[in-house]
Length: 278
Ligand code: AMP
Ligand code: MN
Ligand code: MN
Ligand code: MN
Image 1 (tube, rainbow, N blue to C red):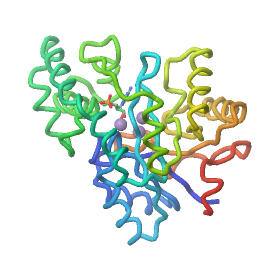
Image 2 (spheres, rainbow, N blue to C red):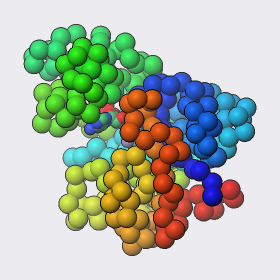
Image 3 (cartoon, protein in one colour):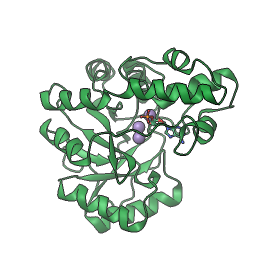
């Protein structure tokens, strides 16, 4: 059985390794088919593809788009995209726009609770100035010794209701799916078990996603517990959606799950890659 990992990050967004280093780690971990899916940005794809080719690793061009749905931030992964597509690039530039302003507001709010200079501090961890994210703030706050680890920073400072959280309106679900489709790609809802939706809201977003032509949801992801693997496998089947598998690896020592290390997709689920000729 092929080891397929269709979700991870590089320094182009909030990962710790450069795209070529992520490729090398995927290969070393026994991954056969690998997608790089940086947040709201495709800049790492050329380097990732070249590195994968040298390593004889099957490469899938991808990304992870931030959207707002029902007041909640949701992530939509695009796979097998043409990263040069104009409408996609324009849409991503628009959705990245505003991250810097949000970061300045976050820094002001953090200063008010005793964490000064967080904008400059976070910036030290940023690989791509267009893509300052909460993860970069979290790394800085760990460095300060205020919290022992990244999840600790999120729960104390960076999630909704906490002092460093600044609400942000991302793209719409329809926009994200249309950018992915316009670039020839397949749309996959990332880590569906992570959103704070009740059953009605969950069904509504899945229905809308399907209406728009969304193809799959992540079933096996580093964000799901083992109990959630079974739950989301069942939901995928009920909704006629395919399933995907991806570690959501961000970096050594930081991510709970390494590249290629997750269990396989349950046999009951049709894989998103079923018709890729693998
Ligand atoms: P942003 O796009 O700036 O809102 O940052 C979102 C990123 O923060 C996600 O892609 C994750 O990498 C990270 N993240 C979000 N929530 C948590 C959490 N509870 N623990 C650790 N990392 C998180
Ligand atoms: Mn991330
Ligand atoms: Mn995500
Ligand atoms: Mn991710």
